[in-house]
Length: 228
Image (cartoon, rainbow, N blue to C red; front, side):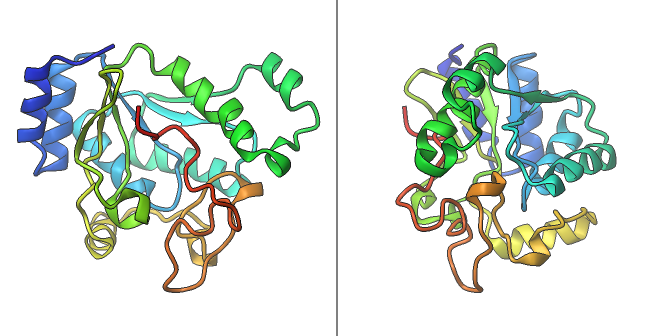
């Protein structure tokens, strides 16, 4: 589903205020906007903005079957806390998992294939009805995201809305505190970015926030946010 160019320009003009931006997206694309959330370390702020702007907006959570138990508990807690009423689990097809990862160890020898099976393919299918997807990505998260725009048009015409793209880590932290948002329990254990349990490690102070994702590998993204 592609988005009309005039709507894209309007969204760009509305990008200074995240809440206003998402309200406009929901108004201009009724039923055509969904938020993506990992319910990870910094997810609470984006989800609080979604809840304020459009609490009925679908929130898509990739249930890979490999999450930390703390993440699954946090998903339930945060949805209740914010009053989100349309959180949807997106899972890989059981038949595909049985065929391509029967032992559950694909992540250990081919993490790209594991991400494709458990994240990329299920999300591609789940997001077909939506012209715009909202993400919590920020420029400060990693060197691969330093040019991230607030409103991003993909090669297929789908729009990614990144309301917090230009926010500093300090501004994010201040807003989380101001709103009194609950933290993911693993943050206090040195996990500033949290993905699937087998492929996520804690990081040392001063390191890139995403350096604990696929640590020791050249891999930096799961594939759901690649250009194209």
